Image 1 (cartoon, helix red, strand yellow):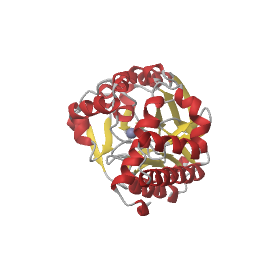
Image 2 (tube, rainbow, N blue to C red):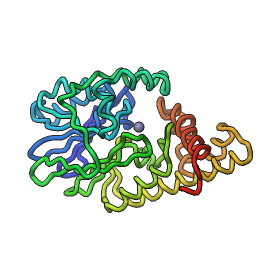
Image 3 (cartoon, protein in one colour):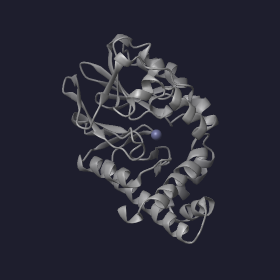
Length: 306
Ligand SMILES: [Zn+2]
């Protein structure tokens, strides 16, 4: 676990789930009140608590824990974390709220989709219903001292996804809506698992661009300064993948052949290939789940919509 200051009032805690560094970030925002954005999974809750301690934040001073969506690596730790934060409320997209209160189905599905990765993340614990605040697009959370978090619904990656905007730092916390930023090598790769809706995801990226943010604070992983260029590049990358999937499907190719074609055409993926192959989690998700999500979208929906 290490803690880094990323803006005047914002800190990054590398929660190191499964001992993997530079992969899952939680952010701590300090106004008059304190908020945490993204819990990381259950298995790294103790690391996040250590991060808070290192920042000198008492557990009763945390007022909000906001998650971008309920996937285990973003909101899985909500139930275990909240037990240690007596005054905190959990902020979540309204469609995700029931699954935080009763995570049994989420866990079963995660095990099915993620296999052994679900075990690295750990089983989510339920969040008491009275601690959950279900939110919608445009809602605001005022932390005092001029620090306000605005909720921006950014579905597409998942139907229960929202990003957060903090105006004083011009910072967007995109969750999984802007892809995975491999900050060590400066490359963005898609995160587009089933049931991926590229048309909606692209509209969400556009929505984030319209805000004209300066900073992107990725959950995977860390800070990027050139926010608008990063968002545009991610939209272009998704369109490239969809175009290749479309051509491959037209020629009767299966997922494996289409994946190879994507690697050949996408310079970012080529640059990241060694990194991805050596990574305990990305090696299992980028080629299978993300490429599959895009192929599935193209099979089901009109490519002209993207
Ligand atoms: Zn996700």
